[in-house]
Length: 269
Length: 233
Image: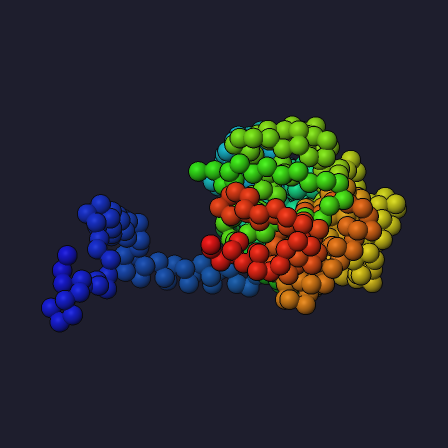
């Protein structure tokens, strides 16, 4: 070990020594990043060429469509989008709660088999919503029902994970006290864990509602109902003023939902 | 490495027993073994008419819970529910199922019993206060109310005064002493405080390194007799 010649004590390195494996991994990660940037990011020339086309597209999108018949149809589609998000989030939360309990360490009634619940939650969460939407469109046909089923699965995956983490982090002392009083696992869940985790559950649910509104907007692109279908048609038929009106409406809906959930969160905090 | 070694105790109904010892002496483990919360690696426990080695069976556990109240050092209240709900939780394990999860769900008689238990610990007026708004001493009182609400014949308290200031700690021990006396139930508590052991127990058992070092009536003891328990030989 190196020694400081003035103090004759072992040198205290300012940076921890990098072992060869970590060094190799860092180099490999750096190389992958550089290769990725070279492969898929736009070159400055290509970006420069695209900018005028983007400007031209924006020019054709303005002013947004204001035809009352179109606006009426769009409003109905927006309502359907919000309904998909609300119903999907509601049932998704209902599905996620038992999944979270079954997967939560120290609380699960499944004991060592809690991994099975964790696997289901992971499957729901890791498969992207558009893939679930394609699956449900194939299974139940085009329309809002496929969208709602997609949001249910998406919400169950999102809430299932965060509910389980909140349950695992809940106050151990109250759990132990109820356990000493003869509580069953389900008693501990509802008497101690749920009250303790309620702010976290509500926060997670509100976030999942925000995500659901955003998701339900794009699900229509693959035929799962909502405003996305109108947006897709508008672009495919080169009806750019209609597309811009839809984009503006989406912006208002998503922003409105964010404001509403922020307000609710502040009220609950 | 066993935590307790050759511990053999016989506690009579209605006795108030203090279990003292330094940190790591095995006091809390002994209490948890008696309550069936920690499995025994050897030996057996005969408590409240049930005998078990290892862990109590489900039937024994149920029978024990009906007759046992357990109070922890850090009260273990559910923070976001009311004092009344926490006391109603004391009926969990008494066959009330989901009706003991929260005061809103509880039968009228259970709510009234819970209020009476809160009055017995001096917190009748605070029945609807959320547990996380109570002081440490008040929280421990609610925990005591939760432990006694189902009228157990044995109360086990693990360092009930250790997390409180001296005045609040003495209040809690006085309350324990009074309640156990009034209800004729057995009280077994652990403490680091020699004065608590001598003032509030009929009998003092001292543990050292997992073995019983001293077992005597508190009236026969002085603080000097207990010094070696905490300060070596």
